[in-house]
Image (cartoon, rainbow, N blue to C red; front, side, top):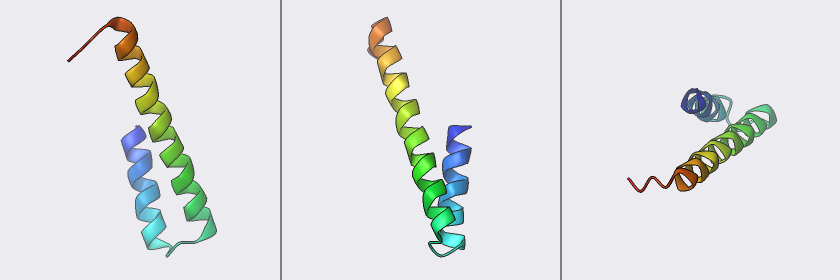
Length: 51
């Protein structure tokens, strides 16, 4: 789901040639991706998984 959101925001950024709405959508999608990867890393550290 996160990957789909990020890809859609990335495509809209290029398709709309940098409109303000596309820039905001891309920034929000990027924030979601960073939050998701941070939570995943924290969960893996908490469980002691080293793979």
